[in-house]
Length: 265
Ligand SMILES: [Zn+2]
Image (tube, rainbow, N blue to C red; front, top):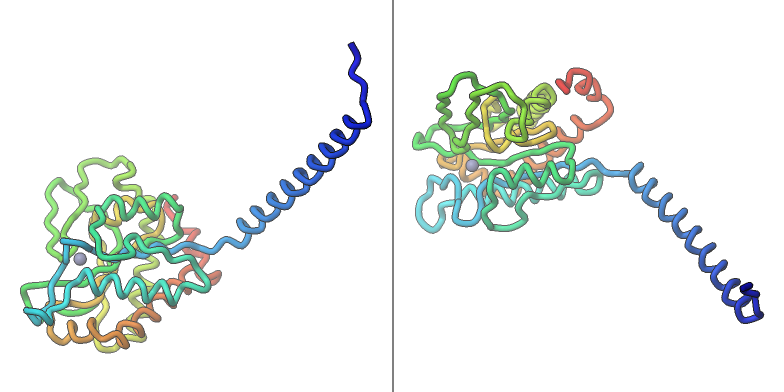
């Protein structure tokens, strides 16, 4: 049996052809849009404000109602850096408010969105009130089963074998992470004169699972009354955030592309 094209069928067929043509055009447009989006993709810097929720982190030297908590300063500081980076980069936070987030969940955020950098932010705390300064950490594997690392960020990675797994994937990025830490140290020392900036390799768990260059910055000691005052000063913190974001920008800019050549990957 033949199916003949009646005038009504002709109309329906004509309508179908028009629909198909529009669909094909839209698909082509979407394809181009996705391609353009990919081409113009902003680099992603995941900022990780340490602690949160009932984990308050280190506490300020000024005890009582006025004593500041590490978790509050790290969140404010991460927001400031995100604002600085905002126009040129995407800078999501691992936690956007005052709640607890597990350590593996922090790097998981960065890994999931394939971030270009992971920056964890902490504040130092010590029973010694004179302990002071800024420390930029990069991941460094320690040999031997027993590791003692005394810091506010005291959770350390325990190396008992040489395998690279998701738990220690940062091993692939150590060269670039160290380069970022070094650049950060130099630029902070150039601009921030009231605190000394050190660089240190340590087996920090929060860095170990990051599948991209990653550092942890301890922005002074909250247990030091002088530094606590600075850390609670929004103007000083905001200037410091500008220095950090400038260093990030420099690291990701073309002139630092040579870091890729020494990447261990
Ligand atoms: Zn901390």
